Amino acid sequence: MTNHTVHTQFSGRLVFVGFGSIGRGVLPLILRHIGGLTSDRITIVTADEAGIGCAADFGVKYVVQPIKPDNYRAVLEPLLGPGDFLLNLSVDVSSIELVKFARERGALYLDTCIEPWAGGYVDTAVDPAARSNYAMRHAALQLRHDGADTASHPTAVLTHGANPGLVSHFLKQALLNIARDTGVEAGEPTSREDWANLAHKLGVKVVHVAERDTQVPSIPKKVGEFVNTWSVDGFISEGSQPAELGWGTHEKSLPPDGRTHNFGTGAAIYLMQPGAATKVRTWAPKAGHIHGFLITHSEAISISDYYTVRDGEQVVYRPTCHYSYHPSDSAVMSIHEFAGRNWRDQPEKRILLNEILPGGMDELGVLVAGHAKNAYWYGSQLSIDEARELAPYNNATSLQVTVAVLSGMVWAIENPQRGLVEPDEMDYKRNLEICLPYLGKVVGEYTDWNPLVDRARLFPEELDTSDPWQFKNVRV
Ligand code: NAD
Image (cartoon, rainbow, N blue to C red):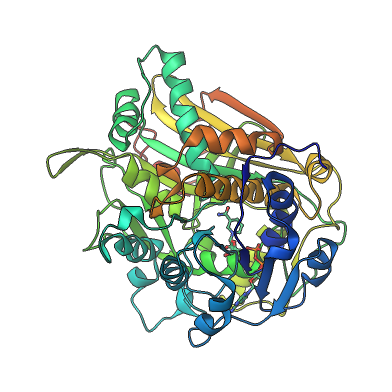
């Protein structure tokens, strides 16, 4: 018996593909909060033995078998049937193929990002546009048009970790809070159009996913080592993709290295350089103003797309949206070293879990700007110390992700026939209700900051002083 709230019941089998920092962190939460799912009905299929001790702690079957294009059916077919759940927390495994496979088997599905097969992120034989998240998201969403009656397919939740994922729910709460505080009638938005109209009515120009991780390792980063608070391989992959951002209607000019796509909704652009080499200004309550990396993320595209207002075919409103990520100081040094090695991986990699000193935190939220009260940050301030008290096998960064994986799974179990779903299309209240107990302090704070405030101009810069929230002012 536990004292933890059981959010739902599940009678099927669960298969993990991949069991790294996120898989190990979410397993204890799943066993706590999803009733009826006993450990004998869970199987882990992964590429290495690193998680074997954690699996043994919970009595879960562990199979070391890297999933590849030529073996995924043979390996996964015996493990998955109607009413089962495929949880994809791997790197190097095609999300699109697993979504299709889960659908064929009648199983539910969730992942935390849209991944290609190994090598797909850095294949220089293909155009940078094809290595973008815009292209991968577009290809995934095309599965909605693949076969009849797709809406009644088993639910497949795309990209539901902290970001992408939880931040989409933060954004909805933030918009309602801003409406309340600025005297705008918000009503009870339910449809995509309602939410987009609300953001438009509030005058929101920009949404930054603003994150500052201050966790510090007890063993310092060595030369030739990549240290991170979550997947090193995942960070290297996304940092090597082109920088990408949802491109708002208030933007006056495309960046000189900005490129548009000639397919899809046109909600986002990409820059002709990696995200790990692209810095942007942002603000969070504890961090103050910071430079973050503009790492490409699915939420930057899905949020700009979701909050688009159209008049017929004509786009009349869309916010700019991008990630601005200041990872832990060790990860900043790791990225710097990785770039200096001409984007070739360091020989050693380390994901921090037990060897983190007390006191650091992950501050992750949305900075929603351009409205009557300038800018509002809403999100989670979770310290490593709180994270350790709340759940085993987690640090502050992973817990923000793993609890969102849990809430996405609960929502999928409760809504089993929704077909392909992105975080913006889910019930934000249900997800927040499940996540809140694990997020430390959840705060909303207004700020007078904008990218022109207190800007020391050491060299002449071409700024747009008539609109602080132009991307040219935000970009470093
Ligand atoms: P990790 O690097 O710690 O673990 C990756 C896991 O994938 C390992 O268990 C590895 O054995 C497994 N793997 C590698 N190749 C495989 C293959 N061919 N077949 C099966 N398994 C394979 O990563 P993590 O920190 O646990 O992150 C997992 C995923 O979640 C990554 O894609 C990462 O980008 C994503 N992520 C998303 C968020 C978010 O907020 N949305 C946050 C953190 C991580």
